[in-house]
Structures are given as C-alpha cells and as structure tokens.
Image 1 (cartoon, rainbow, N blue to C red):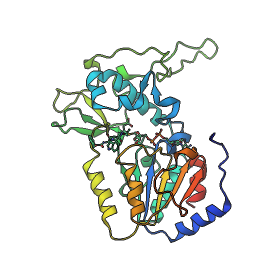
Image 2 (image 1 turned 135 degrees about the vertical axis):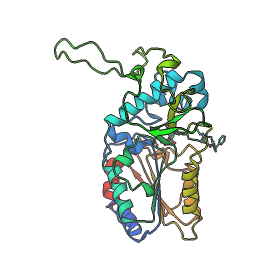
Image 3 (image 1 turned 120 degrees about the vertical axis):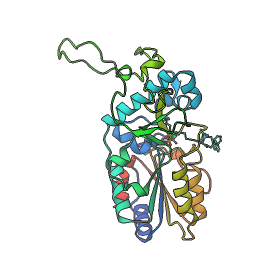
Image 4 (image 1 turned 30 degrees about the horizontal axis):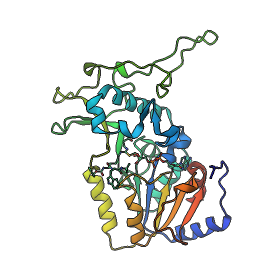
Length: 296
Ligand SMILES: CC(C)NC(=O)[C@H](Cc1c[nH]c2ccccc12)NC(=O)[C@H](CCCC/N=C(/NCCC(=O)O)S[C@H]1O[C@H](COP(=O)(O)OP(=O)(O)OC[C@H]2O[C@@H](n3cnc4c(N)ncnc43)[C@H](O)[C@@H]2O)[C@@H](O)[C@H]1O)NC(=O)OCc1ccccc1
C-alpha cells in the first residue's frame, strides 16, 4: 500500500476520536522516528535503514563502538548535526500542548533527536526511553561521568567535511557523509572525545544501544504509571514501526489496562499486529499534519 501525501481520514473517525479524547484522563503515547520525519530527519527504516553501507541498527551497539569508535562517533556526530539543524514540527508542539492540558498524559519517546524537549514538552511527562544524542557519558560505566552537550562538532575531527568553493556562488557546501560516495577519514583514538574525569576512557553518546538496559529511572517512572489501579483511557502510537522492545511492549500493557489505541502512521502495514479491535483508530498520514487536528 503506497503511502499517500494527503491524509485520508473520515470525519466520522475524527469525531469518535475527539469524543473519546475529551473524556480521557490517563493517556499514554509511544513516539517513533516517524514523528520527526517532517522535521527532515531520516527514520531508521528510511533509505533501507542504511547509513553509508552500515545498517543503522548495527552501529547502535556496544560491539560496534568497541570495534571502531571513530566510525560510530562519525555516525552519531552526523545525527547530532542533523538534529541541531532540524526544528520541532507541529506534531511535537501538539503533543507538548496536550501534556500541558492533561496531567495524566505520559509520553514515551524512542527518539534521541531532542526535538520533543525543544518543543517544550513538559519534562515530567516525557520519558526518553532510549536516551539522548545530546548527553555524553564515559564509555567506562564505572566512571559514571555524564554531561549535556550541544557543541557541534564535539571535537575538530568530527567536523562535517565541506566541498570546495562553488565557482558561481563561491560558497562551500557541507558534504552528506551518510552517502558512501563521500569519503570520510579513519579516525584515531586520540582524535575522539575523551572522558575529562577518568582521563582513561572515551566519551560515548548517552543513548541506549541494543543489548543495553533502558535508564532505570525511566523504567521506574513508566512502571509506576502502569502500576496505578486507574485504567488507561487512550494509547497513542505515533510514527513507529513498534518493532523494538521493551518500548513496543507498552502498547499491549496499555491495552490490558483498558486503553483504546490510536495509530498515526504513513504506512498502513505498520499498525500493531496484535489485539487490534473495533474500538481502535488508524489515522494514515503524516503525523505533522494529523496530530494538530487530532489533539486540538
Ligand atoms: C530489533 C529488536 C527486535 N531488538 C530489540 O528490541 C532488542 C532485543 C530485545 C529485547 N527484548 C526483546 C523482545 C523481543 C525481541 C527482541 C528483544 N532490544 C534491546 O536491545 C533493548 C534496547 C533497545 C533500544 C535500542 N536503541 C535505539 N535507539 C537509541 C540508539 C540510536 O538511536 O542510535 S532503538 C531505535 O530503533 C527504533 C526505530 O524504530 P522507529 O522509531 O519506530 O523507526 P522506524 O524507522 O523503524 O519506523 C518509522 C515509522 O514511522 C512511520 N513514518 C514515517 N514517516 C512518517 C510520518 N511523516 N508520519 C507518521 N509516521 C511516519 C513509518 O511508516 C514507520 O512505521 C527506535 O526504538 C529507536 O530508538 N534493550 C534491552 O532489551 O535490554 C534488556 C536486555 C539486554 C540484553 C538482552 C536482552 C534484553
């Protein structure tokens, strides 16, 4: 099923959704890369999930960092750069506004791009399940050093290469290093971000890699929300393929607590497979266009 540009949504389903939203006190949302697609950031599955010749998911592992920390840092520095260039879109703001309005609204984001925080989403109602590109921490977990950092590039060796000056505009253009035809240097250990505390280990991005546990405080907050005896009225599943766990597992946990599910996705095939029932909604289209309408 090809993804269509104009959201095909029946007024009737919007009306039934609004009627339920109006009665909802406890709402849970799961956010994925599709939420930031309209801000110009590639999704994990976009471009076949490839960064240069590498599966993005294969670079998001402790093993890849141990094997070639320079390449993994070039991958994450590129994503920091792109995220800093990007801006939150109307969907990020619509979610932040709903959180301001409904104290019982808790948002679980799989995104590490910093766009929801930049849309002033209330921090107590935003759980960054997989960390942030803008936290740097010591690669030696016994050291424990961590800092928030928005410098770009973090070190000179991670600067995005630019092309020679264009003859007409005499402007240099940034090269797109996600494209394998653009050559990038093999970086040496001493050129990479070093831990200023233990002065032995490298710094690494403050994200959760595959095979690593999610942040304890975040898991605790989500479990407390789910542990409440009160039912959950609504589960919003926004721009995610819901294939990564434990994040994807929260959809069923919300269902088990009485939630009706609303999925917002450009791809019909990406509605959660299990437990779909008549009370649920599938809104096919761009989250940046649909959410402001849905959440008003
Ligand atoms: C691949 C998957 C099967 N593997 C896992 O889930 C693994 C293993 C596992 C654990 N439990 C399981 C149970 C079953 C099976 C496997 C497992 N999980 C883990 O390792 C987790 C840690 C997972 C976190 C990994 N880190 C990420 N990110 C940070 C780094 C980084 O970003 O670099 S995951 C990363 O990938 C995922 C990508 O998914 P999406 O965001 O959904 O993006 P995607 O591109 O796939 O889809 C985009 C969607 O948007 C739609 N879309 C596009 N444009 C738009 C648009 N404009 N509007 C609306 N929608 C749109 C598209 O149609 C599409 O549907 C996100 O979670 C993202 O954060 N840790 C862990 O479980 O620890 C304990 C443990 C420890 C050891 C051993 C066992 C257990």
